[in-house]
Image (cartoon, rainbow, N blue to C red; front, side, top):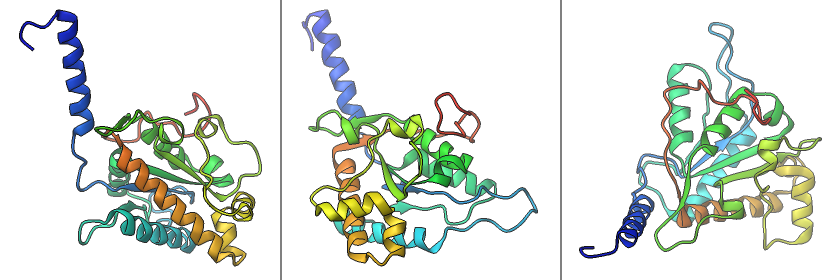
Length: 242
């Protein structure tokens, strides 16, 4: 850049920094996607056993993992997704914060209890939403559904309106499916599809979610954010809520 005008030099340097940031390699130990879902918060010390994921959430996670694996592959012995199977304890908290702070796509399973019943659901969402989404080299700036890399999925559709922090992010509605499939997904959610025996619709929606996860990861990169603990993270989905 010798002999370049000062303003041109500054512009070229800024472009080089932007490209370097976008080209930074992903953490090979980080999950591709993080599944955020509702269950009761961890009990107080000595108040009972840790809360475990229910069988339907595990089923969804396993199906999505298999589909994402088939789309992008994964390192031997390592799954592309993260699900906090057992809650409770300091080690669990650190693992959860690390996964939410390093994954590339945040898949949230929306339900009434998810939006109102657990501070940790709001903390996970808040942590991921603080991370910056940047284009990978040669890709366009993220917009629309990709701007946040958050994928809000209807699990058990909430009865009321979505809170502000969630309503700001476009709800995932699968494309390239029959109108009646999309209508059933909107009415029942993924859990409802499983419980009412609509397996083909459930499988089709999960496949579309996997394709969406793969596309976000291919086009964009979410910069990591490492927090030592949950202090300062929002515990509700209301604006300004703690």
